[in-house]
Length: 341
Image (cartoon, rainbow, N blue to C red; front, top):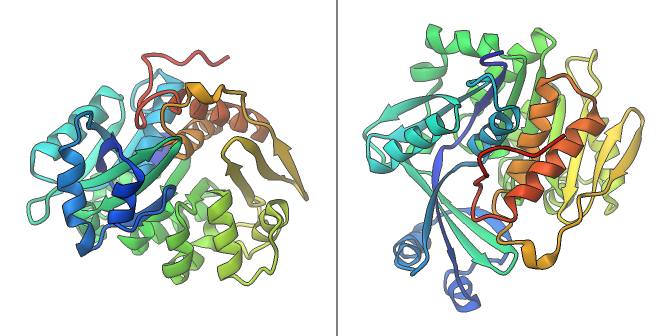
């Protein structure tokens, strides 16, 4: 039914282009990373926009995931709701149009002090280095948007909630309010570790939300950084998943599920008291166009099955399918219909 899945995050327009190592070195970028733009990255956005085959796609981690979930579900439309902040400009109009085309019920907080956020996706081979200039996305205000009765009604309608860790840098109070609501009503709240810098520099905000997290997503690098920041003293991803599952939790009726993806290697997930490995779908290296959006797509596929109240194994299978589709295409884009059985 409509508005069953609720997402809130940073709506960004992805500016995507293939670059070379010199470009990465010039701006001090790692080949596979996600960072927030600093002053030194300002010229990067102008340069990447001048690349011959530059592409513009609606992005933003959470928004990508809810779109993919909606795409996997197909009908009814507007199963997915999305909240975030944009500017009153051309890029903002594109994001609105793209959300509508994806049949997502997007309710943006629109302000004119900052332009719509952008994310430079610097592609080299099957790596992608993402540099986010949040701008408007950083202006989301709980009291100006989330707290409005009409908006909070949409929050209450949902049964599954998903927020990428990236939003912890913007409005941790909004996340907490949604997380506490989910916990109080025994609904499912999902969070993503999103990037190493979240665990490193926003650990306090992250750990305030953690007791409300029913399902935690992350990739192998993020899991390792998280473990290091929490002094777990372990490298094994399965052990990290288990230890993360055991962190304190408010709603004890639901045992936390931890799901860590590892690119082409098995996805590991906590199933009850043990950790299980789930192999991803095979893909020929030559078929990988770019891996930007793969993690978002995995979560989107997973959420599409979760909303239908399917079991963990089925959720992971749907996630693997969606990610497999996305890496064959530029950015987080998808064909008209899924071929998922």
